[in-house]
Image (cartoon, rainbow, N blue to C red; front, side, top):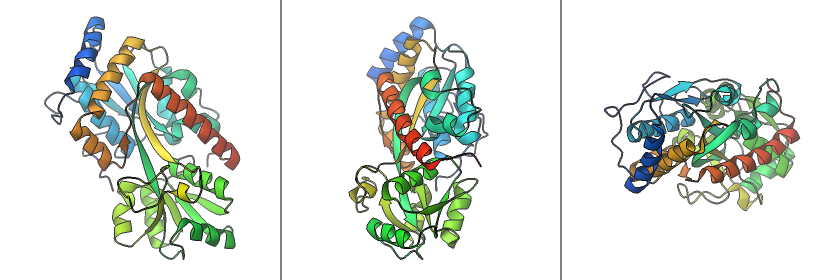
Length: 336
């Protein structure tokens, strides 16, 4: 399991506190010229994270925040604003001035489906957030308690169809990534499984280990040691193809053609943020993703780096939003 950071939810990063990651010189020189021409940033920048401290998205935001702080010579402040599966923070970012001093750590699918599940939210991720940079994709494991008599996806599907409604699927909350991945699996296989939401992945994983629930989609760092110890059985990885970190584990798509479910992480800003500021942030972040030390740290979080331009980032957000909204509408998901 990825350990929580021993830092308060709001923190400032400085040169002295940085991890001394090497600099991608060419990309940073280009971004610095744009930044200096505009004088950006000349005061602290906040990064809104819509989840509590200690999760993958929060740790990722802190790593990128450290890098930006040093390379742009200004404090980047992490502001955790959890609630509504990350969408309280997203709405706060959408309402902020578009001056480059508020960023949003975007997590999909939660931010893509928020307004569908929580109709009182007054923002739209495509309309109100400008794409800044893509960071990484992170697949999950489809895992079961060893009491389930299935060792492959075909065996599991057959067992589930023979016992409709008897398999309980844990998740870390309604509308969370693991919940949506399970609904996609249900939609594509027509199995009848029962969703059991928890307040966080920790309690969900505890009950999966104890056999109170039978299956779960969980991120790799949280579950891998339980799988290796035989306390859980991983049936497949949810990436479109086998994941290099676990090459012997098949992908769900090998048995359910077209199935792909992974968390995508990136950064956005209020829609009216100037293009040159977005370009500065994008080139600086992409230099971080090219750094071997940073790539290793992101791999430890269970992801594969995915550097893209702002336009490419926007294309990912749009395609993921369309994909996951179909799943939410199929499942009729509503807040608990």
